[in-house]
Image (cartoon, one colour):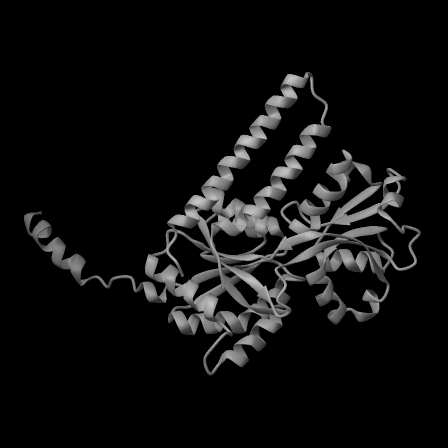
Length: 332
């Protein structure tokens, strides 16, 4: 036994150490269209990332926002391209941090949520929708989708003390592509979508796109972001951030890198960002929660005021935390 104890350090030293450079990083992809389509679109860029980091980069693409949220919560994702609402959840609950934000070729600072109807629809204004409760068929995005659910719910329904899930005759939940197809094929009367995905839809489904009409457009929604696990080494996080924020912007491969981004969407690159980029999304959450509270039935005014104060204080604390964590983050 004594000989074994004395020999143990030498035996352990002889064991090969894990080569972290060969441990794959997992990149989570926000579903755009189908999961396989998203994987194919991102693959060239992720191959470039792997070469730059000198480390394997594998991808995970799911068909739903909830699926990606679950992968992040289970720590199966190291880096991810996500919507603002999903990023809020990941940063607040699952040890992720924002390092970059999408930029588009047209220089826009964001995109817009829209409502779609068939071109020949009798619905001509939002008032036409409001005038017929339990009449129209609605297709919306998932609850974590900014443009597919949160923004129209906040600006159109909660502002009129309505809940879209109970206001319409039927409600189906799907991705933007399927919801647009449902309108084009007269399977639903109205659907939520967004201007960026609608451009992509027009390219892939020109015949169906010709059957659509935009009924309503929201205020500006900031672009999606890249998040990274905050327990990765500082050196690795810095290398990831450097690659993402410089990709397709300079060097002899800039043109081919930009072509890779165009496979994903009209993306010109990613700008350096921090958790503070999520404040506008926190504001949308706050507005929706407050409008819902004001339209709910309460046993007393005191109960309602208590709920409103809780919403207010929670929002202030969240914004303070987002700004504070951004101030503590190293500059990319």
